[in-house]
Amino acid sequence: MRSWLVTIAIALKVGDGVVLGADSASTLAAGSQVLNVYFNAEKVFNLCKGLPIGAVTYGLGSLQNRSIALLSKDLRERLSASGKWELKRNQFHVKDVVERMREFFYEERYKKEWPRQLTDPATGLERDVYAARGFMVAGYSAGQREAEVWTFEIDPSGTAAITELFPVGHTGIEAKGQPEALLRLMNGWSPRILEGLVASGIPLQDALTFLRSQAMEPLVQSGMPIQDAIDLVRYLIEVTAGFVRFIPGELSVHEPIDIAAVTYHEAFRWVRRKHYFSPELNPPSPGV
Image 1: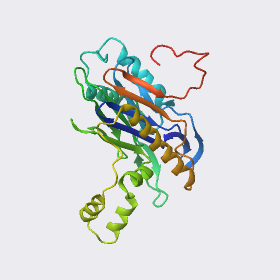
Image 2: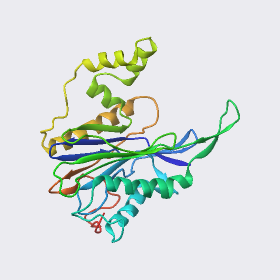
Image 3: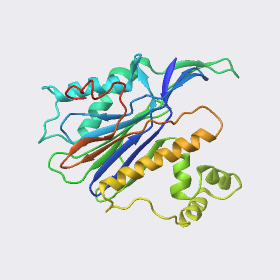
Image 4: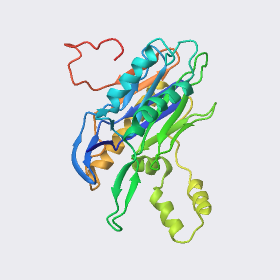
């Protein structure tokens, strides 16, 4: 059995910081059979208490029978303890954190479980299969006043890659998991339209040029206050959850919604977060 975060995960970068958000659905599957869908998965993480850095995850939901949420807290212990993994307030770089995540999740854990053998029903031959998973990591490198957003992704071929999402001086939004509804909303067209145009004989580049020329009203502005960026992320997740609710299939995107903001002066701050315990009766321990 495997847990999948078939999800909507969003990173929105504006001039004042980055907002990370995700839904809470996780799918438990055995092969192609869905056994259950749960609505309490944790997908947004505080990577090091007190530092301006956080992450949101999507794809494979567990490794070594432990959730990615729990493993992320194990990683946070390493990043907070003295030694070669320690994040020092005045020295760390966001890319260094992403590279440590790659070592922790990919080298130490993922490669011990994947690939797995799958029998092709058509040929009866076995082949290697890999599970895709990823993180978007956002934060401020020591001494820098502009936020960075990076991805660490393992693709269906088992290759792990690190990429910077937004160049210096650029803002924008990235959605992972199930972005169909958001692409329709923000671009004005579905990727299925592009596929149909190409299938009809129109060259890919010509189809892209035409579709991208149909400008839609921009939702993201670099000068947005961080609260408005938070409101936009919440709205986009709600739109996706509503879309998934009414299309055929399981509820693979579902509330509650978790949102955090990463800013230079306030570091990582939860904006909206579910709890499986009452905060009034059980105050969170340091580092949670």
